Image 1 (cartoon, rainbow, N blue to C red):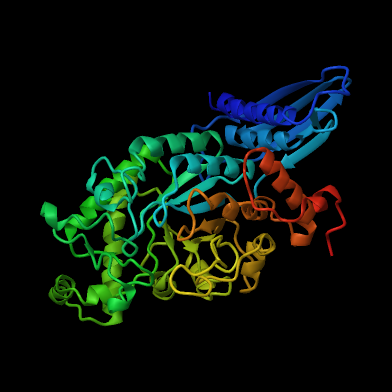
Image 2 (cartoon, one colour):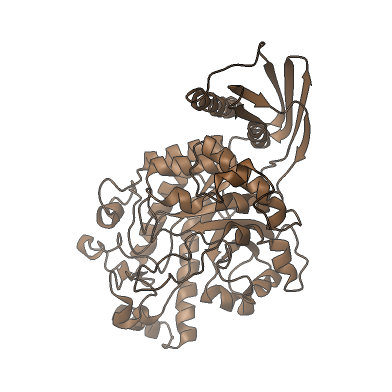
Length: 510
């Protein structure tokens, strides 16, 4: 059963804590063993976590003599899993006594403030191994984050080895070793589900699509993508190298997309699907005869408005292919873009089908327009929740494009209610779904990703779970301690302060 698998994971944490502790301490000071009993009450056990899953739980801890009873009550298995996670935080290794110790009494009634709490990991610019993704899921579970959004493809590479379209990885992966098989993704989804995490795959389109798509002509399908591997300087076809954009007037492009969608549906069975949709530049389309001839035949000229019409044609046609695979009840997500800017004014994309993920800054006035148009919103605003900012530029000198570095304090203080009130909006809880921290991987791979994600992601996690009205200073001591707790669980986050500060609470705060 699912709950039994969840309890096995929890037991593994305790075993690791004890094993690591005994490496440096000798048990002493305790004459009697202490017994911990666990009772769990669940109303129903859904097979898979979704956006609608009830994740609330209650936890009671009571001690009499040498016996402690912990009781967890939850509506679902996933709520009970969060209760188990909290219970694990009440137990620690005491190096003085050389044994596990725990809180003897507690009453906790808990539920998340937002249903969508996640991390986006870009696996295309640099490959992130399956083993590392499994490790990241462990960290998400410890932070009670329930979403891993995989940016699976980009112009740089296409690492998914599609069963139906094996050419994608053959032409698009960095090497045969840097791919995800169908079985890899299936394993990832099952592993995540046991830990209360859902996987949302993203196939970015129509822009950010290049390597992996260049085989069409060789197989008699024509050009599936255009301007592949061109430099942004050559004709302004993209923002960052390498360029690449899908061919929206080639029907085979949509056939290939649908085949990829089928593989992802069967491997992951996601409750939501991300269609990408950001940073489209029209220069490549405008300089491609096949595109301009199609536009002329369809009564379009070559104005910006006409290219927006072409973009909407692509979006609507590819959505039909998504519906063929996932059904019309599956919500789809788009990044904010010049298309959603226009939609916020003129409509065209159904708010009942689309969720908009905001990556622009928190003062972008497209946000209230999208809200009032009826779209549900997920926030990854670049001025607070981008984990890759503030490092040296990877093209040219200076700092990268989203500098400065976003500290944990900035991430913690990104209060979505406060953000919306800045536009004069008291948000409907059903329309602000939550948020994701974004780990773009231009300068990240397996060797460096842990320290760039943690411990800052824990600040985002508390904001999205508890959403307390206080600012970062209220959370500082707790945050520093939680980072130490995560280290014990194998999550190697960057240091926040000298260890002396953790051992001498109250002396490193101004």
